[in-house]
Length: 257
Length: 257
Image (tube, rainbow over all chains, first blue to last red; front, top):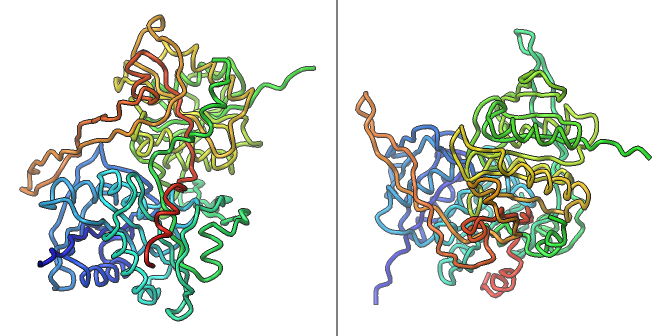
């Protein structure tokens, strides 16, 4: 029996022309039929933002003259997934992959990440979804070294599906192919950013700020994504969008309210 | 012994002049010393977006000529919390309250909500935090009817603190004060939006889209926020920002990767 090629939706938050998504498209074309719907400009750190008070534009574009269909979109990564599923795709994709992000989305970064929010949105729509991120912010980063792992993880997700309400957050250490030690399934490290604001004065004499910060991880658990990455492994964190802190319900029920 | 008045940070996503935040400020002034840091314009549905590729401005403003300090900020709700904690406040606030949002943030809405993302950000910073939302989108909504409940929940949160890594998502039904039946601690209903895009053509002949959708709740659990609200109760969902789907780690570990 001829098995149908999977339909793969590709998106990201660095914009449709970013090297990371171009590599992800190349990997996915070996696996299935690819449709790309991605932001027309960088949308890093947009989290789960959606566009409700503004218009949305889609452009069918051709970047590398190959077989995949590509659409750039004026909205956020989450908008891209919604538009893809409800306006562009003729059927539900078999999987949605987002990335490869230029920079880490491990630990608490998952919550700020447009890349991961796109994957989460696909999960909400009932589509198996994975966000891939490389721990290298450079535009010239080596996205190729992890390609065999990205292919393997994607194929397994297509084969096995994902538990209901779960998407994957995959982070890749900045290492050469033969230096990557393997894959670890992890929990999200309890780390955070300690912000500092870089205060400056504009030419009109008005103060303004740049957000900067230092990433601090005091979670020494060996089962965390940060530990896996530090030790040369690719980390996979299964991520859920039921945010209920079930363990806290009892506590709050004891309040005098 | 004289007990120090609590320091309360107030923010929202509808903008600093929205009726919802003005009511929240009024309620909080009876409880403690209030500092407001809120967006200078509506920032609904911005999720956990932060401003990393653009400048941030803060303006000290005076809206109602009362004792609280107020700052409007050019950034997102999450930016407001970061700026408040790291630039504006002299000490960590005792609590951060966000809202009162014009419209529901129950169920999956928590993930798109700027109001709740501000509360989550405060939680990440180690500050007890609560997002309040009223199930009425109108600018003329009756924010007063729930004020005694908002006061009670806030006082209990200050008194008891919140479990580590947990913030509260409080939704208030659109009812008169004497119609509200009480408060229920709930889990997030497994509901979602079914999007439809309203496609139009602009005066230049180019197609564009408006995101619209229908909220569909097929989760009939009596322990959900949606059930509580439908039955006339205020819902409290404890929300966590460790997104790890711990139950799924074993499944993924069985993959051939």
